Length: 553
View 1: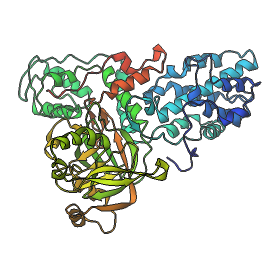
View 2: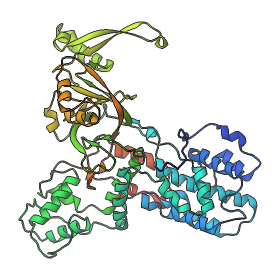
View 3: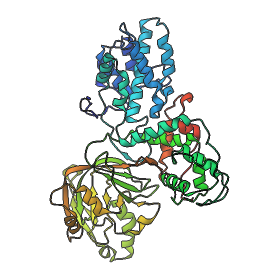
């Protein structure tokens, strides 16, 4: 984000009962009256309370006078405004959601009186602010969806100041670049979206139904259609042998690439699931991308330096030295078990590591899983190196003491030899594990919510890479020492736990993963509640239920 852009210190609430700004709004002013009501009866979605504070700030700056339909009316600014809304599909948003056609009709007609001009003026502003807010923050607040999210909203830009600046300079179109998410994932998804969007409404290019499993070297008349579909998908550069019916080596390599992107076994063997990939209509692919772009609007804007990303449904961790790191570290992870122990979506700062950590056993795990075993076996706690420790409550919690169970460091400790801590309200973290076999499973939602990493030493080397006194040898020593060692990071490392069933990796390869927590459906339900006009219904609603990824070929 350019440093020159002003930011509000904290994001404004989505909806408010009353605001300090309300006392400054003149009720006898046509614009003020609309702002106080936070309802615009001429819009398809009259309630604009989610963005009302932004709109109030804009009109406070103009002393509650029109900014579009005034004596100095700028046709260029109006044209640019309509251009922004008309081009909403370029960011997987819908012009009809921002009333663009009715706005054009109102502006083109003669204005009968000042009150009508004021009403139309506010409608123009509400529609623009809605679009910019949706573009930057997302149409859906992730905290309102029925799954655990611990990501604070991005800092709100000073839209009143920016709008005034660009109206005066007649550079309104530049606002889209200012508000568009800067996260690399969003920009990658947007490129793919715009490449596929012209195909919306079309059926699959040709039906590819081989009727049997195909292996490299096989011959089949539908190989002609396979070539055409691979060409359309960008998996092959040209169709050099358009009439060939041989499933040759070049085609097999392209099919492997598609299989890998879609989360299937990348062996080049074409079974029913792989064949189905080439018959999916473009609307279905766009539907998945639309959900992915909505989620990527929740990601904080990137900053310089390292970061760690865990894609939950992919069961993978990526560690980047910078936002443009071309060779990030990649490793397998184990995440929270579906449906009741889901790893939350979160964005936090890693503050410290603990080598040879104790495991402070959560109360619910101790009561439900450990106490029943201890009740039937008097020596169970000692055999598992679990000890009861007396803790003192703070005065704020009434004083007094309580007992807490913890497991000593060692081979039986489920945290393994190191844990990576980023304080958060969900009380989850990254950690090692002594159970290595589970990393060989294709589906790895097995934990209580924390994320187990397959290569803890490598991750420790990444986190401590520029910290004086730490190298491979000292890390190895700390991971085999008899005592716990707490290491505070000189520079905290951002950690993102992300849920993306459609994800673009650092090589711009698109991958599709199984929706292990059913979050795609939950997000779609939240989007459906927005009551977007039917003419602008989103791609997912138009295409019906998405086909789930399967593990078969």
